[in-house]
Image (tube, rainbow, N blue to C red; front, side, top):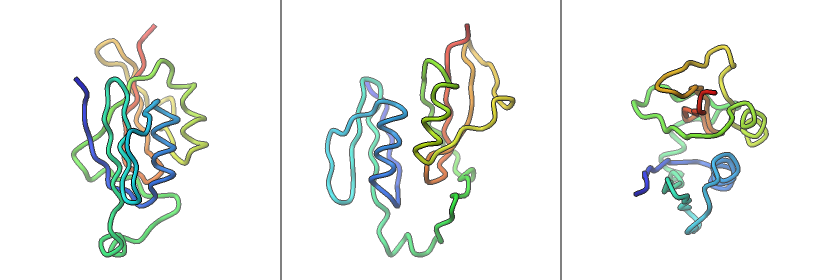
Length: 126
């Protein structure tokens, strides 16, 4: 069984690269206005926001953190610190290490993807 999610995006290529490089999601299907990425655990669909809708929301650099949504995707990795520079190189960022917390046998750290969507990254505790 795979978890499934959809993210509406402005920049399909950079968002596809981010999720592929950071979390090992491989393109399963791609068109001009969407891309479906998969792993053994995830199916993530990236859908391009139509220009008529995107124009109503000014683009910011760096993007504002989108904390007003009640949903946060979470990904399990082996080592948060190894992922930190990878995310930064691809336009995302993790919160500082001193904001991490432990819960249910895992260390947790929030961050954002290149368009400001909040993510949670977890790693096993030693």
